[in-house]
Length: 449
Image (cartoon, rainbow, N blue to C red):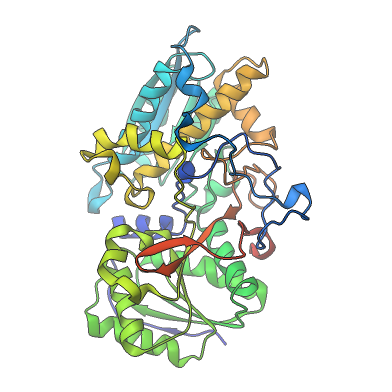
């Protein structure tokens, strides 16, 4: 049985893009050391001492948290400068404006240029801004190719001009696929987008929460509808019955209660909420006020410290997809040190859930920076092309922080995707959000549509 109940209006293009990315926000820099043992295969069971090595999760470091990173001791790079293009959406119509992706990435590049560069090469970033339309995307591609960049990084670009880059032999690495063409393009994306994040949510609902019926709650706008469609397709693969309850972009408390009541009337084993920001607070309070005990899975956005502070124990029974454990590690300390000045707050106030979309840019660069160090250690000369090939062919890489393994092209239907597994967290009471007991990383691949 599949049905959809609608009420509400369509949002702006910014809402569209935010909804498309909501399930894919992963900031892995608060996990463990990249040098941990294990090949990173994901599991929904906690590892034990009897488990084979391939089922053990990366991220456990024997080094103390205050020991710093090996990169801190690297001298300034001495090789030839590498010019890298960066394409990002800023100042676009309808609120399409994500400058923190560029700003956070630039902060990470600044650190890299003081400590080893990219494979011992100083980095020059050539930024080009797109506005969320094909014309500016094409113009940026032509501009960057004309400047002779060795590599193009994609922050967020709805209409990536792959043809221009490919014709010029310039490799493309992005952080997040958004449009359908991104998944099969001649490019690599470090995270998996909705296709993988929503599939992981379906796996979690089935394997961890034993769901046979699921209610989905989301705003009725194109982005949220697209995100929900990804989840619905994976639920279909699993043979899980579902219903979708749609509301407005902005609802009153009574409106959220109405949505939650409709969702509960379906008799689900699990609910999935795709609301974000104020919608996180509204849905959590509504569920609690109605006395609904059905567990709810939502995105990492709803684990933001401000959200949890606002709802308190009304978050009991909520699970958060794509949220790594916030551990006291050198990677976590570096993130706070580099981003606090950019954000205009103290290092103590920097939290992974408070980075927003800017965290994507930071994680992308620090991951590539780590790969560059590994290439140098292996005696491989770093160029834009060789970095792309190294990322595409390596089987022992992780997103910066060491928790999420990279497996570029491991699914034939999604050759540009490099990440298929996700951490999950849960509300544990007294304002604490932490790992789900007995659950390691959740692999999206069994239910990919």
